[in-house]
Amino acid sequence: MTAASLKPVILLLGEVIYAQPEWNALSSLAELRQIVDGNRERFLDECKSGVHNGILAISRTFDSVELTGRFDQELIDLLPQSLKFISHNGAGYDQIDAEACAKRGISVSNTPGAVDASTANTAIYLLLGALRRAHVPATALRQGRWRGSMSIGHDPDGKRLGILGMGGIGSAFALRAAPFGFEMQYHNRNPVIHPSSNPTNAVYVSFEELLRTSDVISIHLPLNDSTRGLIGRRELDMMKHGVVIVNTARGKIMDEEALVEALEKDKVFAAGLDVYGQEPEILPGLMSSDKVVLMPHIGTATVETQRKMETLVIENIRSVLEKGALLTPVVESREIEL
Image 1 (cartoon, rainbow, N blue to C red):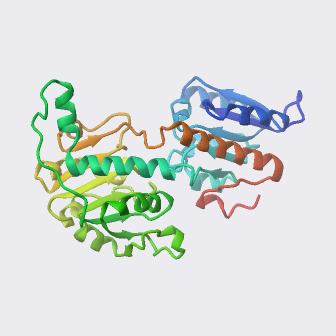
Image 2: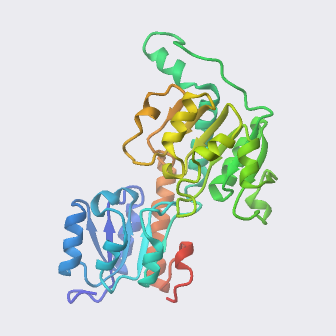
Image 3: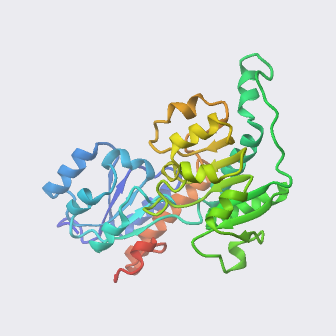
């Protein structure tokens, strides 16, 4: 709190675009501050000099990483002691070292559920596009070359679809993929128990069995220490010849250089990607391949989903102000005593 206000202070990193009325409504409960420009060096200097002392919570957008850099140990160590909550706009929260936050007593929330439908829809788009390598004739058509160097693709009917990660997005994807005639299987750390989490009654298999037996593999995992580089040369070698791979999760889950090699050898028939290891940079081998459907991380880029996400971020802040706790804390934060 500041001398000019007895209200708690909330700092917004980035902009609220689709839920501005809901954000503005928080002003009855808190003093709202905002940062819309700058860089990491400036933000660190501000933290060091005490500019942000007194803030209770940070509401941050995905793109605000351009303003602060990743919330890593260096940055977290400089955050004001008054900070107790970070409400992050995104289901994936690898931009934040949530374990380091927990050690500092800072609780972090994300936006589970709000992104499920839109990301699953994107995965379906990439899946069908990759099966047909549809971008090749589509690009040729715009260039006045009709079908160009189009190759014959594949139908989904009867193919075995392996879903790597049957969380909210994975189960939403399964529900959308089932009508195309796939045989469904999945792998999680543990089999899902509640039927609503496995709406297509997909068969649980081991990680290696999923790799060895799937005709199509769709990745729906969070990025963390256990999933970083999970799919490398060894795992690609285990896959069926001509496999199709879809990734709408995080680029660093895959070894992209190994994927390029597998595409060049026809081990992988095609890939559909919305995420990359060094965004916004994309590996040249992926850019130049006519076997890859590329999208620039727009899985949640719809008006409806952006509004849902922003609203949930704001609801987390409102819950902090009214109840002293976040609505959707991430796993690392659930043991913090608030």
